[in-house]
Image 1 (cartoon, rainbow, N blue to C red):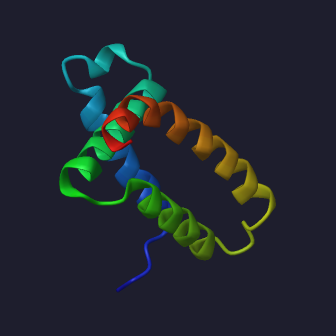
Image 2 (image 1 turned 90 degrees about the vertical axis):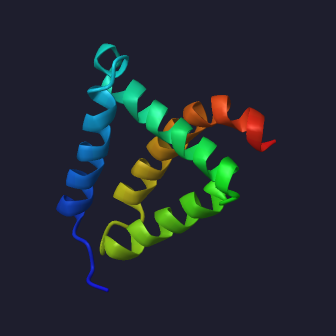
Length: 99
């Protein structure tokens, strides 16, 4: 499988978030609100399909770190903190079903 570049990953994420922004309610939300909705939907999907969201998130963070040479430490640490905050706020609504 070919490695996916950072720019391609960002473009795919922007496309997914664009779909949320085009929804009936999405155009009223901020980009971070649409991100929260996407993450909440993914949490619900994981619950419905019995996939482990937290396990997938840990694996995704490890994959991002492995694909970003030189990012270990400074940039990855700062992004990890931001990601944890985003995931935490999105996890609140979805955590009811996963507890």
